[in-house]
Image (cartoon, rainbow, N blue to C red; front, side, top):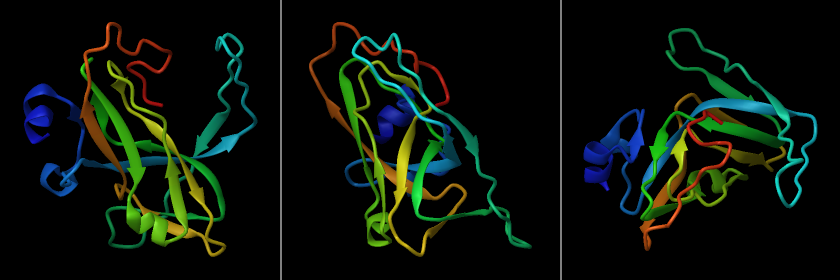
Length: 165
């Protein structure tokens, strides 16, 4: 995987390659956390799909600390990652929450990372712990695992291509 990252650009904008590489995958880090505003709509053709707006939550910085903390209450949030991925047509990705989050009563939900997708992803963070959680800027929260597949005839070409979600 290290070769695919360094030589082929599978993952870009990472913070520290050696720390983020794992035995089976790569740890994704937090760039922004958003609160959702409004509801969404989803239909079969996506012609009427509406993604709700969201607004970023500002992290609180402690004196002398370069990075701030998000203090999150119970609820659902959108996390935007630092890293950009460029998935070739013969690879797909699956992402999972880091086990430390699960032990805190927090989880992440992801969709399949389609072959051919290029962009900066986002995912749902659910804080179930009644006491909430604190997450520091650039924390490693999500682990993506890539799998070689038979090359897709046509890779991802949806509305999220080359976007920061």
